[in-house]
Image (tube, rainbow, N blue to C red; front, top):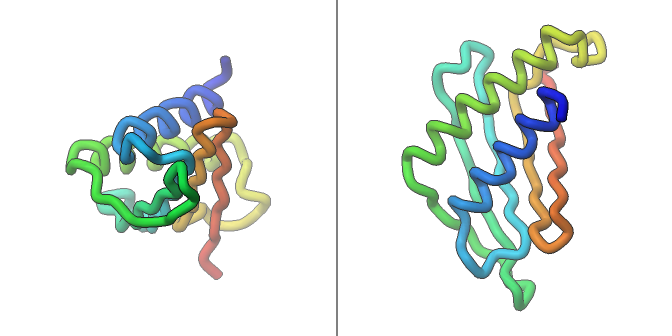
Length: 110
């Protein structure tokens, strides 16, 4: 497994562990300033009955997620994966639990 896949797996597992037990999809939005010292989050989920709601994970989960996001952003920078743009500052992570899939969308500052 390569380093980026490992980071994706760690992020996915962290969010699954932090999310509600009845979640079938978890959506996390993170705003991570370039200094990486802080992060703002929104955590949502869709349950088995297709109802959506938000949740608050414990502080340690948010702290660990920030460290993983900083590590992932540094990987993108180090490997020239920003398509000539500055580093991303916002991402949306969607985890489809039954499908065992993770999707991460990035937003770049103008």
